[in-house]
Length: 133
Image 1: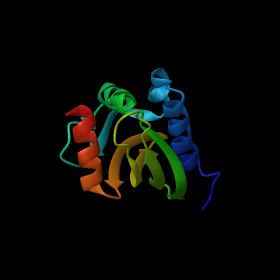
Image 2: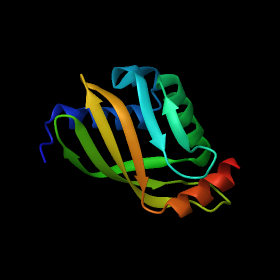
Image 3: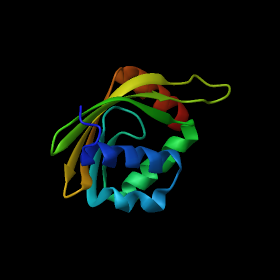
Image 4: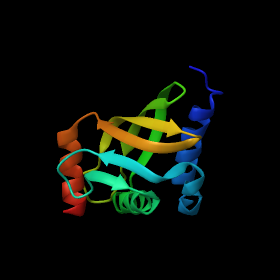
């Protein structure tokens, strides 16, 4: 994998912004009309359209003390596939520890679409249903 590829750098910058809660900087990496697809049958599922909807979604994840850490990425001129570990750290609650892959579509140096593929959709549905239900 070419770790110097600009699309890999773009995804790393997204994760840096997310980890530091710098939501005002998301417009540096996300297209205005971004579509972020969250599968499942839980309160956060559905397609988020536009930066404000993505910011709202990412903000909702903080209620679950949700974190993500990239493990491996593959890159082309239009896509990045990233596999990462998701986990939560809630006291007195069942926590999530799950793998996910995200397919990031990139156009003109911005993320235009994201598809989420969780390791165990039933586990994710149960966790988010409990935390947000």
